[in-house]
Image (tube, rainbow, N blue to C red):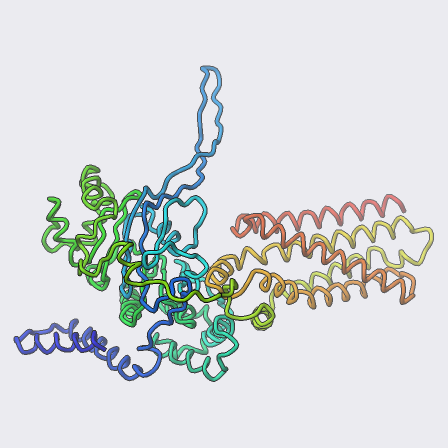
Length: 581
């Protein structure tokens, strides 16, 4: 409320001084005033709630202060080495370790909107992954929370991570996505009425209430980004990490997203977002900025202090030039690499806090530990999830059934393939099981059935995990559910369809091929066929989980291979039958 009143006071002051607004400014003021009135109208609800402090490892009700010391990250890269002996030239690939971040330091105070800036390849996303705990391998250094070394499990309970791509369930409506998130992220002690109230408040504040019955795939880019934020606001996190939240959006959608993040920061949350090259207006919305260049910190401090800092190092920002654009030009080395090193040395690679807004509030690690002493140790459950695995399984199965109903293409394809292949093999080996002289034909039929169950089932399930890997990584890291619950739900949802398709195929091929009409023999035939289907399904899921087959070129290759194998199998069988006869 304080931010709204200060904004209104600034408008009144300009009007008293006789300031004349242009038509564009008048339109912007109307939109801003409407937003303020909307927020004031809902101030008794979600908008002005303080985030829940659920970090039991630090035993303090204060907003957490993040600090990192000497963070270094490495990753494996493949280098091509050329060996020339004068007669021949051989190429060999060798693995090497590439250092991305070089002992960077930094401090991120609570209740602020903080931007991590830098050119492409500077290490923005890597730094965000390290701060959020998303990346743990190849990381050296330490991350502190309120002066104490971070306990990752406790830290994850109070944070959320929103990826650059909007990883959403596109077949569900906005309201269905929110209800699924509420059922998974809120404990069993929260009633259904309370969950609906929370969902309504969040959708109202984020401007999605009028679109709650819209399928997610039909939303605009800005609406999808706001929905991604809304899903993580369900459990009211204290710290939010966002990777490139404005990428791919137009200027109006960018302003909406950044204004929303600013409002969330004013409520007491710490918002840390990577951003590539903001406009001057967007840049001023951030409270603090952290600039990276080639894995080193060029500047850390208040946004308004960036221009004075550049003047202090003899790199003044030109008049009427966007400071964000100018500092990115410096980070890219357009004005000389020596200037980058000058800024890095001046900042101590992130150790300097001279350019923060209020230096008195910037405390050292020892001072933070004294200010926020540990309270009584409370035994805490190691489980990161708010609900039990049985409840997670129930919700995930419910979501899977809705998705299967909305997109029945794969279901119809599987049924159609089983009917067509069964009819083809039935006509090819008609009455083969009823004649003793056609034992070899019956053997070829059984082999064809084996090939069908293996190839058809495996090819249809190999893309199950790759197509949902992005959503799975985001939801699992943000503690929606465990991997056990997700894996069981995938298998249980597909089980009835696999059973039905196998039974349909068995009935057609069994009677057309003239197999013995005995219930026990039919039962054995169906049981063995269904077990083969389950084995093929397991192989397909394993291939999809292990190999990277999500790219279209791999999909095309697998599809063409599947079609060619089926055609060759049919031609071979036909040649064999004709040769025997």
